[in-house]
Length: 208
Image (cartoon, rainbow, N blue to C red; front, side):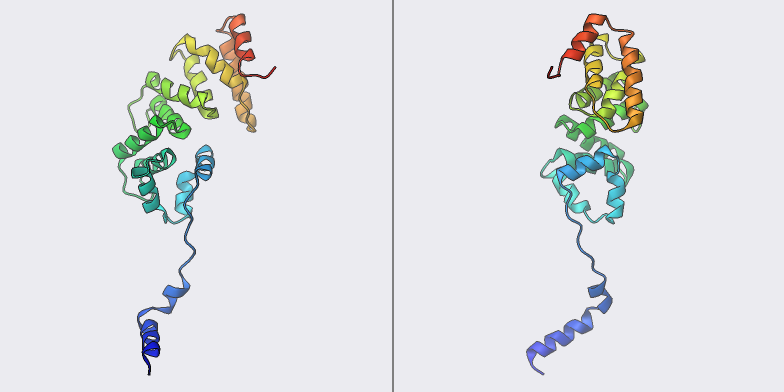
């Protein structure tokens, strides 16, 4: 038996057949566009489970070394809820904050929602306002709705009414329930706003 045959025979002995057959394709790393869609549908943690937590090391590296805001938010959410990693709420919120400081709409909206509801953090609706306002300005529909709800419940400042109304007025969404909610919130804001301010809010950010 020559050396080549000997090596091949050894490989067959030490490598079980099932190990060769059961290895599936590796899951590709998520793109920013894919992550944004997952964040918008709030299915990012479920997707990690579907992918059998194969990307944990890649996600951690992109959060820690590359400091990608999308991956910082994803990693923070994983830590906060113990998905594919050992749970560490404090570290999870830290990475969410890092993502928010870099302008991640998903992180801004989620932190605003958490402060408004008292999820993981101490409830502080006034503290929620800046997060939701920033996310709303960046086009996050959920943040726009939540911001208007807080304003109508006497949190924040009446000076925010015009922007909140303008963002709702210019919101485009395929969700019928969101349409109805936005219509209700606009009516509520209109009852508290002078007519000239309402008219001005409608004129801004339009092309005619």
